[in-house]
Length: 271
Figure 1 (cartoon, helix red, strand yellow):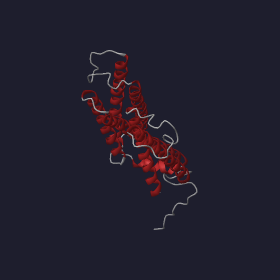
Figure 2 (cartoon, helix red, strand yellow):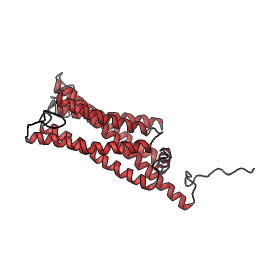
Figure 3 (tube, one colour):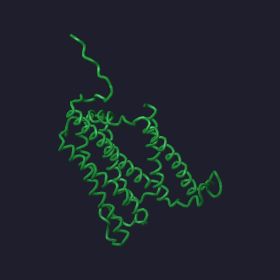
């Protein structure tokens, strides 16, 4: 089990790096740094050129991340087949005692899913801004200045998406902090909130200070971190919900909570 955890963490880091490096490829316009595939200019090792190296390492990391994802899926299926309900019950009992009523759980789940959708729109709209070349279309922040062009409208629309989705996400994270207080998930909650605030700050500095492309990649990294944090919370919520349903079924059937079908329970000793 420890080996699987290490594999899962390494895989998550590799996928995160692949996403961020993909953003760097787009920001630096390095997509054609290697014009052929799978070789680079017909060679296994690329020439030492800025755009070529960026695209080449993006390919290498993508290959490694893909293999790691495949290995993680295979190991997960082998380890957890038929045992997910038990894991879900453990996850459900680990959360804090607050907001444990069914109605509160349903409301929190709805807000968390809405926040995930909002975060996804932040990432997609940001990628669209870069793709349209609208990153520098607004000369001011938080408003867009006096210039009114199609590219400025694209850029400002991204800011609106960030504002609306960001406020929703902060409200959801406040509920998540109360729900998971005292558990390891609260670290994910605080980390997601910090990444969101830093993302907004870097986005403002990007406009006001005219950051170079190498530093603008930090904005992509932070947006990816926010998405990863929200995804982890959605997964944790799904496990908890599954555990709650399993516990409810066990209560209706008279099966003790935590008892596994087909596993003998220890008999009580005579006093």
